[in-house]
Image 1 (cartoon, helix red, strand yellow):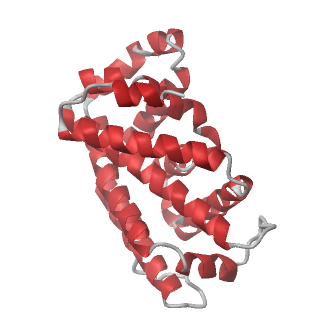
Image 2 (cartoon, one colour; image 1 turned 90 degrees about the horizontal axis):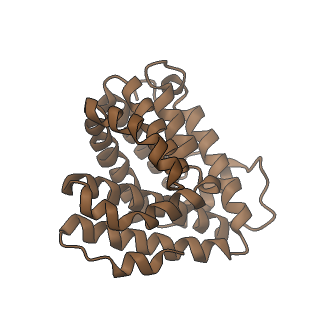
Length: 246
């Protein structure tokens, strides 16, 4: 809907160009995915993986210090069914973003968009590789077989972005002025039709502010998920069962 606005906006920095590139790629992918015959199956896969992540990281998910952050990750960042209006609004305000936001924050946003695109591309690829109908209670063996046939370099990039973007976001939310700005921006955002985008940002800020030692959480998440990926690729019979020291 706002692709022309993305293309027409003048950008003068590397991170602004990077953000526009990923927004354009993500915009085109969303149009492709919306018309895809396996669209509904991508939602089943996303939910299956979200539940698997909760199980694998249950100790972290149930820890009061990390619960809000992980819940935001799984329900807001990894929730493709609920993103259409929010993503359209990001495209819509892109000209103002590149004008007013600092260069380093544009780079972080570019990483977030790239991470979102990669995650949804991989979900669609899994759906295409699993014969329909796709059951909610999908066997682990079925998932792993499709996983092994997908793109390992994209999965490596996905995990690298989780670490990179997670640590960058944590640095931003520790800035007290950001919370104040989100508070005073609520009414203008609602008047501009951006309430959903503002709500997403406010939830993310609140979730990260509640967490302590985010670098420990990110390290554990990425280390565990790299081991899960190695287990699947090696054909491990119980790929999601990890050593107690991870």
